[in-house]
Image (tube, rainbow, N blue to C red; front, side, top):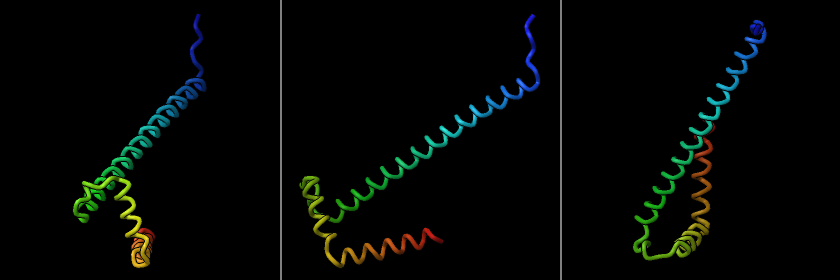
Length: 97
């Protein structure tokens, strides 16, 4: 004759089921967050590439290495570094609010 589950065993089984469900929900939320972050990065890269192409005539004829060297050269000036520092400070201040 099969033994019926005791109330405590039923509670344990119920809690274990809830734990598994919550773990699965957590995994789903982490996957969703990762996807949103990846999509945001992809969008940002596309937009910044489009900005670069709109500002540099003939950039489509350059190699990636040439574009990189051009940007490194342009951004290594004192004025560019100072402007970047200002932008970063403004961004950090806005995020702190």
